[in-house]
Image (cartoon, rainbow, N blue to C red):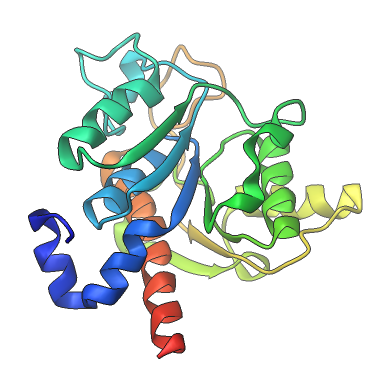
Length: 240
């Protein structure tokens, strides 16, 4: 029997689908402004088998948009602080918190093919390209976040297949990188993006930093969670 906190979830999607959702294995790479809210949405919706991956610690500039970032968690490992929070929502959840980066040196250690879903919320261009190719080659369902910074209008957040994303510099850089390398993603995959792009109006001590706000990054994250949930619902219905 699923926990009582899932009663509204079961009411909408049904007992069978809710049970399936509790059993899917999801790995989220990057738990910052986008990924932390994606994880929140997944756990509150009943996902219990979750791996979260991030190499960073909470810093003061994270507090404006990252779920687990508060004045009390500054300095803590992000995945540890986030896991602690998630277990207050779903104590029975199996949260594997991995304080490390995904890159060429570590990729093989993640066994990506063992997951049902991969969520990409990585910032690094090269590591993002590698994760996309790896997930596609493994045949895992992949959902990827494009750039969520320098935006104000949440109504312009959209979902599209990667090659149809428009108005996003990160998507453009990824496509250029794939073409230059000659190593293309082997499958199509959906992305969350926005075609809005504003100039930074202020200054920052952080090199190459861009302004971002929680009402945008959270919409990106919740949309990614929604893609996982929606796909699970569709898969159950297709088996009926």
